[in-house]
View 1 (cartoon, rainbow, N blue to C red):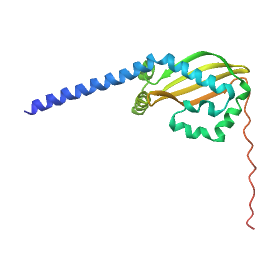
View 2 (spheres, rainbow, N blue to C red):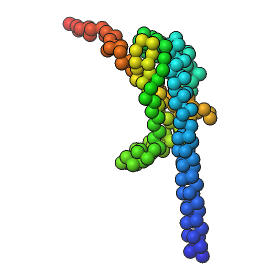
View 3 (tube, helix red, strand yellow):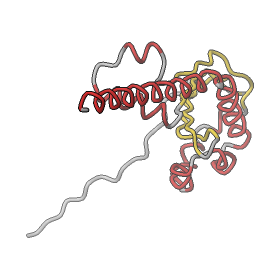
Length: 181
């Protein structure tokens, strides 16, 4: 009797492991197969942004969790520094990275990094990087897309202009001395 119970539990556990492996494999294959479409989306978002360099141009592409942070003046001020780049002309060296690739799996060195890779796979996170040639210079662009409501949404966008030189930080007021005498 106990032997039958353990046999049934063993079969159920094996079926669960096979189901999970198939599910994770399907997600990984989907991210790989849809890769060119994700690359095109990242370039299209960058092109749309470069038309006027305003946050409202790409507001529809942002994930819900990020959209509220992009509505303030701080987000627009960071884009104002990039306006001098002009409109996007073309891109080169497009690379796509998912956390569920052979390199990532081979480099998992702790349970935390395995959990992070699995979380990014389940949320369908894809990072696309490329070199963008704008009308007035080059920039390194990094776009992170995450799956939301069946579509890929913009989670993170970073544009580092190569030809712009260092951006000056806002000067902070000097500290005041307070006397309690």
